[in-house]
Length: 213
Image (tube, rainbow, N blue to C red; front, side, top):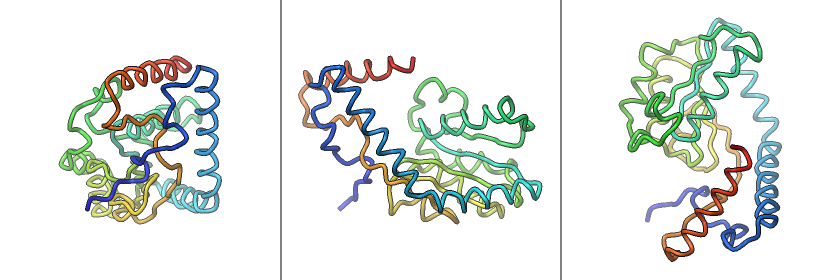
């Protein structure tokens, strides 16, 4: 029997999110966001240990790499992009690798997440033994990220997995894993939902996205 990652499970707190008023919707999502922050706070000590290890790599002359697919990959690119203007770091110090390349920053690239060859290729010739790789995947199962970690470890680099589900293949592949127990995703679309309810949820998604457009 295939085990479903915790991130893909049904969230009872948002099961009727499509039927909520906008005010109720905002309240539920803010509460869920607070739970995510609490999950990070619960791992503060482990987080600090990993940060110290990453800093040691950089101080030794290494670079920091991110790898991920979809939203996880975009967050890595965002962080890497912010480093030079915010902290004055050289552009090459923090590098981000996203499944599907630059095109995946603005649109979904079908199948990119499952491309192990691309994940390994992103590391070859780009990562050194003194470098560190932080791989990001909510489910911990993105083949692109897993292959990137495997290739980075083979090159002698320090590897970290940040995941929201354990056990996971990505967590098992990396030297260190930071498991943030955020629970299931907030806006699920169960297969049994009727077309009418799916349409209502799409409207809910549009309202949620408009807040940060």
